[in-house]
Structures are given as C-alpha cells and as structure tokens.
Length: 444
Image (cartoon, rainbow, N blue to C red; front, side):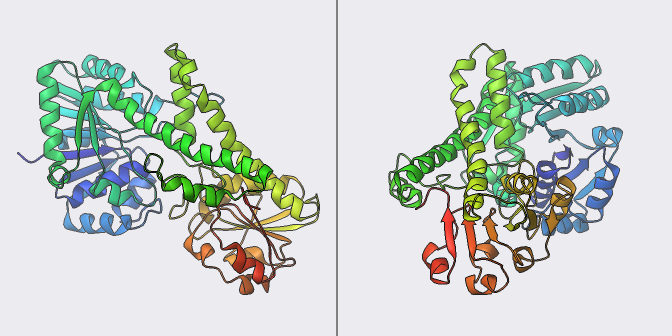
C-alpha cells in the first residue's frame, strides 16, 4: 500500500519536505495552525524564499498530490506517516531549546491516532527528547491505536533545500528499543525514501539518542570550523598576514578540506547559533558540560567578528560614525535566502546606527523580513541606492550581484570610496585600482 504523508509545521523545513515528498509521487497533506500561511501555501505562494521550491510547490498543487489544512482531525484521518517539522527556537533569556511546539504537536495529534501509523520527528531537538515524546505518544494515543515514533533529523542547507531533500548525502533514522517496532519503522522509512536509497544514499539506522545527536554534532562541528578560521583571521590581522591565503593552503589538506573554511563575518541564521547553545545547555543537564565548553569560545569568536566589522568601518571614518552615512549590502544571514534570524549583517547595521550613523540596507530577497526585524534602519531598492552618498560601504552578505559589482559604478554614487568586505568576496586589487580604500576581515 502506498503511504500517505502528513507534514506538521509548514515553515522552511516543513514546506520544503511536503513539496519535495509530493514531487516524489506521494500524496501529502501539510498542516499548520497558522491559517494565513496555509492559505498562502494552498494558493501556491511560498512564505519563504528558497531557490526552486516555489516551482515544486506549484507543480504538485496542480497535480493534486499536495494540499494544506489547519485540521488535526483531517491530518490524522489522511496519513499513515506523520512528519513533525515544527520549530524549536532558543528560549528567551536562556541557551536551552523551546520544545513547546513539539510537545503541542504530539498533544494534538496523538489522541487522534486510532490506527497503525508512524510519527517521524524531523525537528532539531536536544538529546533525550525523542524518548520523552515516544512515551507521551504512547500515553495519549487511543488504546486501540498503534502509533510508533521514529526520529529522522534534517540536514538542509538554506539555498540548497530542494537539492538536499531530493538528493541527501545521508539519511539517519532513530528507532524504538522494541525490535518489532524498530523493524517496522525502518521498513516504512525505507519505503518512503526508496528513490534516495536507490541512488546510493547511505541509510543509517540508530537508536533515538544517537539520531538526535547526529544533527547537533554536525552543526557544532561546522560552527567550530567556521570559528576556527575566524580565530586565525584575528591572528592574521595582528601578524599582518592574509587569512584567505591561509585558508586556501589549509584546504588542500584532505584531513581539513575547504568547506566551511571561508573567513569572514561568521555564521548566523536559525540553526547554528541556537543549536550549539541548546547543545551546551543539554550537556549541562546531563552533567557533561565540560565536554562542550569549547563551544562557548566558538560562539564568542563568532560574535567578535561582528564587533570587529564595526571597528573596521569606524576606523575608515576616522574614529566616529556620528553624522556619517553607511551603506550596507546584505541583510539575510547568507545568500540565496531571505532568512534574517540572528543575521550578522543586520546586527552590524543596527550597531552602527546606534553609534550615530545613518544606515541604509539593501538585500535582493530579505528586505521585507529585515524591515520587520529592524524598522529603525533605512532601506534601499538597489545596491546603488543603499550606497548613495555613503562614506563607507559594507558588504555583509555575499550575494552574487554584490560579488560582481562594478567598482566604478558604485564609486560614482558614494561620498567617499571606502569599502569593508565582510565576506572576503571581492578582488582587493580590482577595487583598489578603481580608487577604493579596501579593508577586509583578516587581510592586510
């Protein structure tokens, strides 16, 4: 029997998973408590920017394989595999993850599961959460139901989410201790992910805690790698060395590799910062906080990059932002995204504005989200608009259109030709030849 899938939570992860699973041929029902979001998705309007995803969404709505609802009753009746894709944000004023949305999902879904089905968690959660949710599922589900929980962490990169869903580099599932339930959960998910497995994608079966740890461990490692090269950038600035050449030389070592070794403004977004903090918080609860104490310095290095970016811009202006105009290129935390959660670019822009500058920001996709997050900043309609009359221009998100900018065209609209490259994305010689004073993090 072909499986019918529900996807609960239709944010970035859920909308992507629902649309891509439908594109594989499954009947999929997406559920969200936000009616406006459901109405937009049902109309083929994607609430987030993700390259290629809107076409996948519209194609499967038109084919009748995908639709959206706000009804848990409808979802429970429709599907036999229920994916939980709700958010786990950082708690206000704490490092720990807020699991209220996951708990609420189980609380609403479980009492309605009166037949054999598989509930699959994809949200990023602290280790131990799956076991707690499995016990809650068993307690709340009807006595005549037979719901089993599995854990299947997601590994999506914003900007590449469709590719990462359809052609993942690995699939990890955590299954229950009961051997019969474990075997059945594995069988069901092998059927759901059969096209990926047929392509040769590794399929790793583990227990609940190991599956939970895979995601947070991966993010902790990537964050550490980014902060390592940015720590080297601090040393390079003091030693008058070039961190981009250092990174290039390190990348040729197969043991190190070049991915996530790009020096610059550091990481942001809705995953790495909150996930490493939640990981530290959970380690403390488990009594092994010393094992992850290095992540505090990883986080601190990342935050220092933002401060150093502000310092570089201030130095170019003679030591003060008061009465000066600053153009900021970039608002999203990374290119090919409209996500401004914990955006280093907006953090820097807001800091500079608080020091007396007029700051104008431009981003190809994230302006609407940026305006909501920082209404006190000014916003331009183009890179030239943001840079007009600026005494210094800051490149803070490495969109292709910024990397390919004409220094002469930009130079024609600014008040002074000062640029700080926060992502080491520009060719210094090209900009200096065009008369610009060029500065970058970790470079002479």
